[in-house]
Length: 124
Image (cartoon, rainbow, N blue to C red):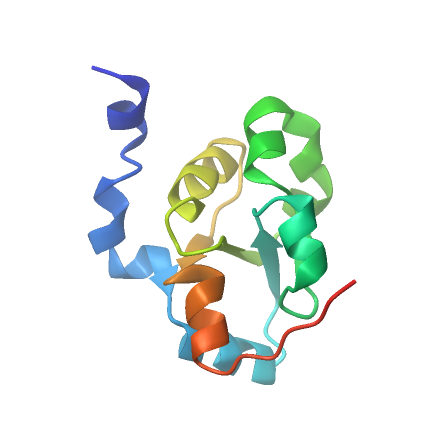
């Protein structure tokens, strides 16, 4: 049994509680819910455009360094993980949950879906 099958990375996409739609995220943001949006794309992509208020912790760093999540996990907020198209968020979600986060969901369709739906973006 390989590492990917142990983490169930690909099996989680059918779990409705493990993801939120763009509309769900917009509603949470409008209600000022206690959420943290973790963008796991690389720093260059994040700098070009990202969801206002999101934090950038590239998946590459999440995989290699336990300490990059300390500030995010300390808040106890619901974490919404986003990536480019919704594929990499599952790996990030599994790692983040293994490090102690309780409520972690993926943004269905990622940034591509956010942009397609007219979601607001900012750049650094």
